[in-house]
Amino acid sequence: MTQLPETTDKKLGLVIDLDTCVGCHACVTACKGWNTENYGAPLSDMDAYGKDPVGSFLNRIHSFEVQPENGPAQTIHFPKSCLHCDDAPCVTVCPTGASYKRREDGIVLVNEDACIGCGLCAWACPYGARELDQAEGVMKKCTLCVDRIYNENLEEVDRVPACVRTCPAGARHFGDLGDPDSDVSRLVAERGGFDLMPEQGTKPVNKYLPPRPKDKLAEVSASSDTMQPVAETPKGFLRWLDKALEAL
Image (cartoon, rainbow, N blue to C red; front, side, top):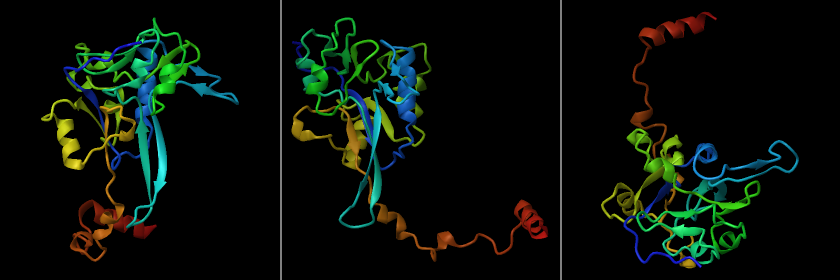
């Protein structure tokens, strides 16, 4: 069985803002594209356009409708991938040592050359974050794009996980959660970030930011100053457009 390091120099991970995520799946497709073309065995798709398609994904989005005690119901989009836990059961259960946690940055990875596809790590993970790639016969999981974040051939702005770089809503943040002064740690402290299923005792590194109550958005009424027209009569291009429309 693989041993976990007692401590890690860093705790690289993601902070995901559930208030901002719009469920567009851009992070899912970016992850699929990058991890099919680069690190490790490609993420396969079996019978992709048939009756029973099966594919490997390292990041998935689940959508839920929730009903707060006060305020209207709202839809929450919940992205989920490997949380790179400090006390990762997927590592300690691995019989070949293929699953391991790096001491230098805390990233949990799989040595695919040593993986026998037994599935014990998937069974041990309480988050369902591991998948068997049926074409390659090995277990796959989020790598935090380890082949991007240290790649000096890329521009510095691109040295983040593909999902973070791609998110159009800015809902995904990457950094060292072991450093209390890092941007991600401050964001977690300011917004009340939380662990997913803390009762499992896995100490996940990734954090989630809670959604804000949507009824707060309705505080601005239609009669407020912000909703008043800026001019009684249109001018310039708008005046020309108004006349053109009247002539139709």
